[in-house]
Length: 114
Length: 113
Image 1 (tube, chains in turn brown, red):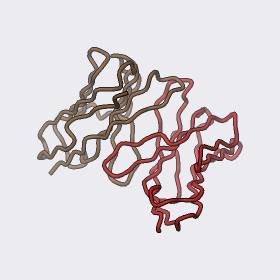
Image 2 (cartoon, one colour):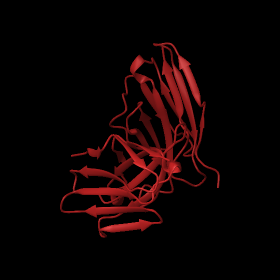
Image 3 (cartoon, each protein chain N blue to C red):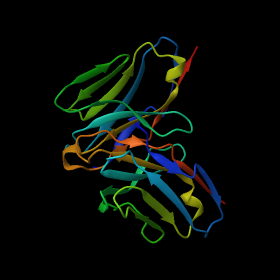
């Protein structure tokens, strides 16, 4: 079974620029999550999708971050404009459903904002 | 209410020793408590998980102990090996309600040979 695919693996941008990350979850997984992992900390949820609907985006900085999952499969996370404090690893995860199932993580995209 | 507090921040154990990592939570609605293992440059991977209807779960060298009244759970790694050197995260969620995992800050384990 193929895992959660993310791209790019690494990205370096200047502050105030925009950036987008892509995630393809495990086939058949209805629930998709985006997490932000700052160096030395645990992953922090940014947004949770169930199919193509948003379940929880309470911790998403909506003035600069946006995410979509238009066809209920792959997803993109965008930051515009980026700030220095956005430097982190952005992890995508998926689960079969949101109820009683394991979340599988991709390898993440390491973003450096200079 | 939504925090999961993990300790210690780092741990050094001799090969063959026992590694113990602790977590505490406040939200009594949490009903799913997994431990994830993360190697450098990789995403977290599920190691073992427990639900509050049992006090202990063992899978190979890994054991979760769960104390519902104290709102604490811990990971025990028996016969620790250099290959166990990684960062470990405890997490919690209200799985029945479909909420996402809330993670602790992580414990970096180094097993010396």
